[in-house]
Length: 386
Image (tube, rainbow, N blue to C red):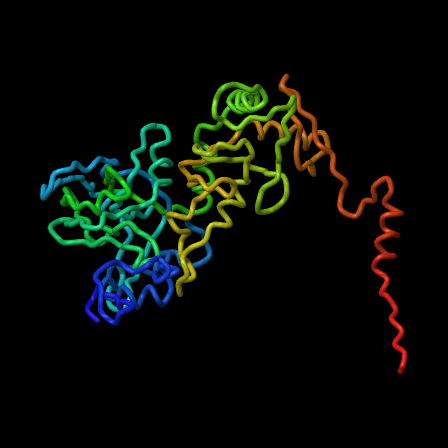
């Protein structure tokens, strides 16, 4: 069977992309490897830490070498994007150790990767630009031609990698000027799902746990006043499309979705619409690297979806919520560290919602327990011989 062809029901062959059901279910599975042997050098390398296993590292979108820019409609035209890599940035890039068989990269604190990605969405708010771009899915037109530093590079598509993936440029980066050339023909299939494509060259940074935690804590927090206004907006009906509560009070959970305990370092994403927070320490600890023989794989760069709403919640897209920091301190000082939720009224006052501890009986606990025991008694069935 020729490369790129698939068998049809009639026994012939088709150059059309395979059905979604026939695509690999994971970019790391054997099916993906088999279907993309011609793109073996484009696969994600095994990553090992220069310090060896033991320290947790995270990858995240840090900044842009080329900011998201629209590709114009002009059949056959070639658009060129230049960007500079300083000597410091060149020295900080993730290092290629081995190219034979599977690629192996070595990283350390502050290591950089470069990726080329297209999306159908353009970030409009400069404050949330990184979060907006990271939230938008990678898309590749049906027909597109790309060169990086005069070498052809190829999109990573669902039929080979389960989903559209960015193109890794790190091993092709040069110190000084680098050039992306892209041609997007006026193929009707190119604009079937999106009317405009936006291109960006991303810089992915790798940082250890301690540095990542400290960085988030130092970012500008959601102020007490911001959260209070958000609560008031939900309690006071208006003509907006926001989710509101037709009541004089609002119940807010204080529980982390992973640990089921009160959050210690309450954070939420810039794009999150909910008020509830999750715990920063636990959020970082639950991020995982890709399946690999390496025992020091860093957390994946694209695995930062909020556990509550699915919006982007990467390190630079997170903010501590000062309202819940103050609230937690007040509850701890009052000896109510086990509180799971609070009730907030329109005047801004709140009260802890008391819940019985595990093992405590309620008002009718004894009778309930006895009833449960009675129901649990096995029925005795007497079998009589004929």
